[in-house]
Image 1 (cartoon, chains in turn purple, orange):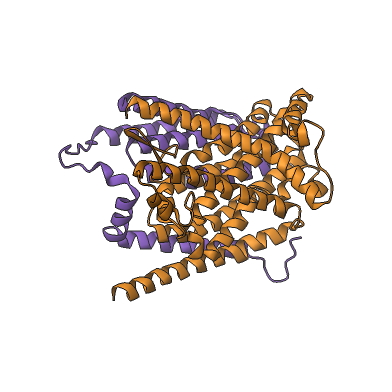
Image 2 (cartoon, chains in turn red, cyan):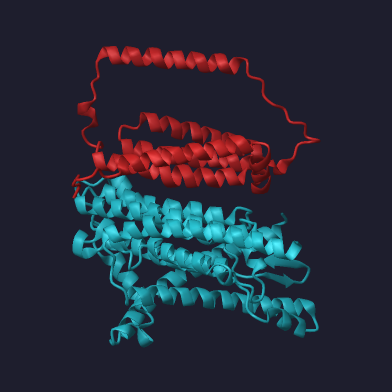
Length: 172
Length: 353
């Protein structure tokens, strides 16, 4: 059951991710990206990490992709994206070379990877639950957690600084 | 999971789905009746006794109207928009506990569709997806006013989701659990969260109004500035779907508020009533059934409150709306978290030290 579900969601994820790249209309790309996040959340649920699944939806599908959609709708690239994009041979060659190099790197990295095999006797299936996640974050990974919080604060202050109106500037 | 529980869950989910649709349908009727009462009119009274068949007449009218899709609209997304709005609205009620457990014979039945340990996060995730229905519909119409309405709706929803999430954190600090079932059980009797979280409830209430696009925050559809908002180009049942999704959202958000702050299915002296019966099973069942009634009474009270506000208060201006959300509600919500944390620490200090 779980295995067939995994293969179903995995193929769906790959399909949606491919459609993000293939779609001509950027708005379709964003919608397929949202679907990709949903299928990834399904994987999290299969791994018994419900908290991660919900947070993935809230943060990525609920907030970040809305902003993506926002920008795309404002600049309205839907209709004349074909005309503006330069389709010369050089760009095609560069794209192929870059993609091939990336593919090589991924293959090389995956060749030597060793999959972790958790011991079924000692494996705790509740490790992805909110309580356990919180305990680990606030004990074992306390310093990285706090540093990430500081990083967020810095980026937030930066965003406010950029968005701030200069003295004497009239925006509307 | 044995087949009895599985069949029961199926029936229960269908029943909750039907009930939310029914309540949303009759919300339209009561909205017009309450509006008429507040404005000293009669309201709908032609279809059926006291106009009770008015929602059916409205739905029939919407179905027979012309199905219009603008020539330059993106057809797929234009049809997808109201569908997403409706789907997302109907998904939310799955994790709300409408009652305690019913004991029939050997098995006990939980009156909750799915009891996940991330209940409140599930609601939050689904609510945050509601924006897509509006945005996709507004953009696919290929109309500037629709797009402006959609942008307004999206920025309003995102802004108020932040304050809503922050006000929820204070409740979660008190309960120590994300499961709505546990949160409901902790408020047994008259031990409701509203006594501990008055400020948090106020913030949540304001955000709930903004999230459901109700007056005084119904800027996405302010007809004086935007003709009609994100659904300007919609007609027939597609428009009906958008309006209907709004009423389902009101029902769901009322249920969430009742669960989080007003004790869900708990009512005062329920333990005394339970103990008054000699048979514990009978006592439990009587209290549970009364609890379901109490839950729905609370939900209806909130729905009435939504309508009362709609016909009493004028609409905000857009910059006022943003100022309220970012400059007032979010700092207040953070202050509420600090106060709650301090309160919990003080309580522990005095009870344990």
